[in-house]
Length: 184
Image 1 (cartoon, rainbow, N blue to C red):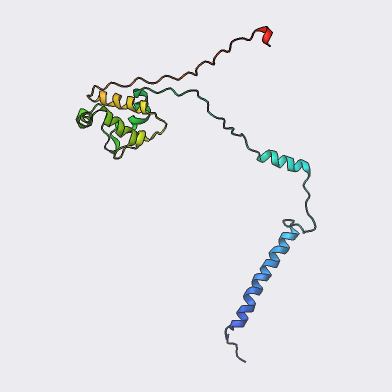
Image 2 (cartoon, rainbow, N blue to C red):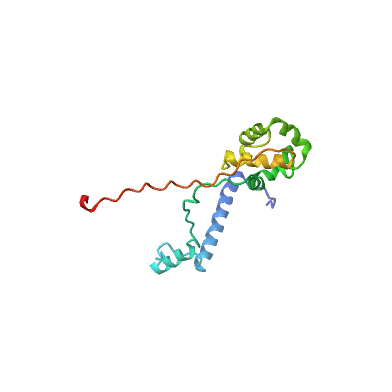
């Protein structure tokens, strides 16, 4: 008699590997069922209305957002200084992207020599790295013109800044003459 191990054949491995996986799955399933982790399909848990209401209460949003139309009234132009502080100053104070610094007369001199109207046109339509309207499309032409005058004047120009436009008030409704009592 020979006690030598001859090895496993391919077909023996094909039967043993899935059989082992199936055996482990059955053992784990039996352990889970006996320990109460898994319930039988017939034992369907019916949730009560109170439990459902409690879950919905727990997952409801903390707050809701309601967006209303912004009615800020008629537009009032900002002064050139306000526009520069809010929009233009980001680049023109630090000289970002080769923007001429406010108050630095050397880089501003050739620009000022082009004239006020050209500078305003460049600010409105954009030029080189500067976006149109300084990147804020809500600015009016008058606000842009005021900002250009403010920056250029701080850098050696003597441009006359346009006055900010005040809020336009609605024209009062025409008063209808009162009808005499006899015509009513």
